[in-house]
Image (tube, helix red, strand yellow):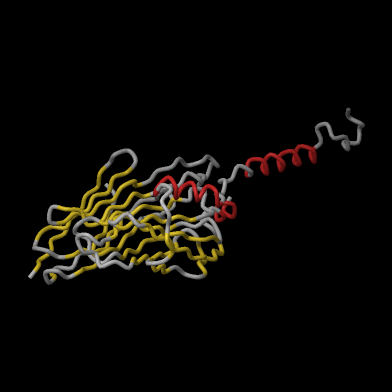
Length: 106
Length: 161
């Protein structure tokens, strides 16, 4: 299971825009690298990233091999009510990695 | 073929070594084909169709000079209040000389706040980064910024092997 790192503030005021950061450890092989034997390493990437909160999407990315290894995103969430911020990464083979963090909205 | 002195080109040591060197050059030749402006225009058309684009409303923060093309930090902020009807729907990042010009597509959902995001991208060399934003009203905005890249994400390969 790939390692993920997420950062969600523990609390926020209603209506406030808070910064969310998410990263997953992944080589994001772009298909142009060769291994020590000189053979081309096939493309192996994360294709989708979604952040959901309060029953709706916050931010979704369709990733291409043009993103760096260990793809990282920071973006903003508008706080509505206390709940869970859920993150989902899907790779090209359909493997899903999930992470989540609680947020308290005053 | 052998003239007795080993200087003929048939099976001499030098000949074999030379052939080997030649083959190595051939093996290095099929490098990623870098995109041209047509490929980039085509990639943008595939994402956003033929609708006209206006310049502006997007602020692109990129280093003017990136030492490594493997990880170039990019911050995109779009000028939008993000209210229910006036918001950013989608942002796409293109690099006009990368083997694949489309780098990523970002969708802003109903719970998103400020239309700002930050990520790291690969750049194959010095080129223009183009960001296109699509608003909820269907209007499209474009901004371009040039980045100088010392060692591209693909060049580093040749240096390693």
